[in-house]
Length: 354
Ligand code: GLY
Image (cartoon, rainbow, N blue to C red; front, side, top):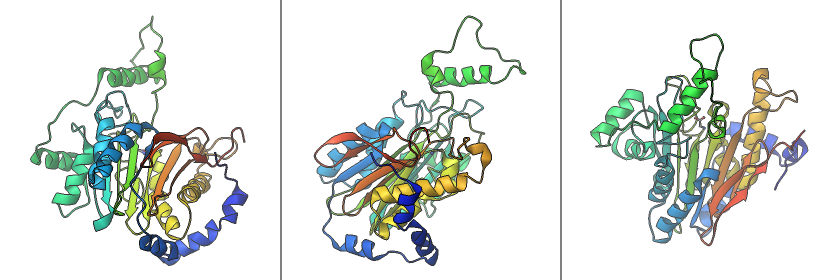
């Protein structure tokens, strides 16, 4: 597992990279070299909850399918799964007990994107995001407009709140304060399963490269649990929760969206890969940027000035190289490299206990 110190960060010349980004020189020499090299796919990369997604995506890629079909079919498995409480059906709701979903897709060959935010009652927001990309002149639809659009395309409306999610929401409401009128059951302690979901920001990202060198990506989520109604995270924001440049690579994120919205990490990561960084280095530089900006906000920092939240990044370049990094150790991500599908350890910014 890679550990990344500030010195290492400076050694990579990331500071110079920032100036390069400001100068807007894209794509760089590495991107041109990658674009000229023979394609190295198929490869599928996903967040740690996406091992079934990478398996499904690879089936489609290996049978000659399109990479956007592949990643969307992959994440649909997790959107449909009531046991993943960070995505789609069964996702944890907002503070009113209503599930609101965000998703984005991006397709490298046409450099096109689509997204939906704060979408209610439709369990596959990734498929709606794709239709926004393919069947409208827009990139992002939100709330009632997104639902109306989904209805127009024949999506079935359903209640996305499962019993488990409702119980978690109720438990949180009942235990939030002694100064309100909600009490938890006297004779019941919160089951461990519910305790563990009292505050989450999950999400699934899946990015893929096919044998013809086509890149695509998707990010889909129920967002931060107990959020204010209408809150939108990073997942549907192109450049934050997802970015794909067919000449360079693809990147996505999971974790605290607010931090990513303020650093546009997916764009940064693809940009860094375009300047020659490996996918892992590029993800670590994004972590470094998030950590640096978070130090300006004391309420989000621990007593050592480190972020009190989790945020993870995943990247895949045109050469088929992949990597991932998070702020803290212990994260894993899913990769199908065409031969085997497995969870791998992510690089991280902070050593344990420091
Ligand atoms: N990264 C998912 C969210 O914050 O909504």
